Length: 346
Ligand SMILES: [Zn+2]
Image (cartoon, rainbow, N blue to C red; front, side):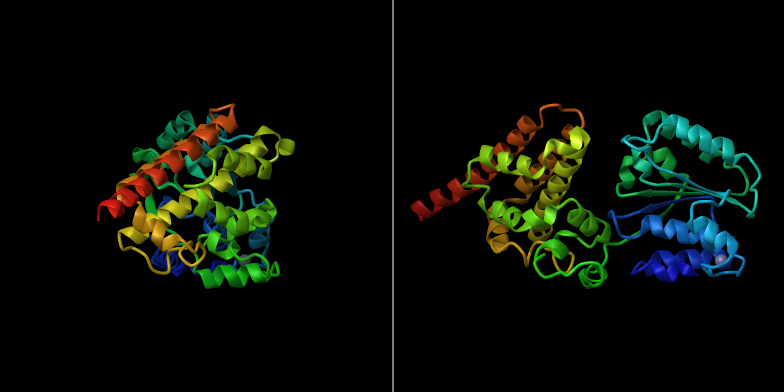
């Protein structure tokens, strides 16, 4: 099986090898886990394994394997948001359904991959639900997502769930070093949070040249003027790529911020270990984690998440970011003030 291309997801690979060899493949699966850990790659390799002329193992060289790889296999269908769109539209799911009721042309089944299935509009989700309730024979639906709870519970209940894990840091490092000279990208591997996709995105978006400064800002949030942080961040996200491009860049920075506070919360509640990415990278990590309560950290995570959502409904991005950094600074200062107060009394 060309599953050997799928790195470090041994659980998913052995699960599917098992169900296929026992003839127990279901009709719908949700492949969930962080971005850039191989979910989409896995879906493609699974289709190849099912279509390949060599039984049980994709050979990469036969006609069906090559057609899947080139996107030309008539029974392999890939659905993701259309160019320039954020959502998967109802029309796309309708087209999918039309194909699902046709007999496969070359293989013994049709395989549909819905990449980032959580991006389906509500209408699209409801349409897909109808198809999943009575799946046409000879169809396999693979829904990939970074956020399974964002899918309709009724869709989830009709799918089997397969979890994908973050890649070990050493694996990300190894894969990245094949592409770039890692010297000079100190924080890149850590900020990838075990996702090769994210690391690659960080590099492509030229985020890397600001990573060191970003790590500094994380330590200064309490003391630095919030407006100047917004200004600096906005300069890293020039509007030369248009509003959508700017949103996407801001989203990257917000994701990094979210991962930082999530790490602090995990550390605080004792779920640390190799899953933490910022611990060794931000010098003040431990002290700051001690200073902030778990409740405050939860509140901060909510605020950042709300800001990410606000990116797409808000025209004034400056104001949105100002509000977030003001709030972050006020949480940090409140903790600092109370600690100083205690110190004075003691
Ligand atoms: Zn093959």
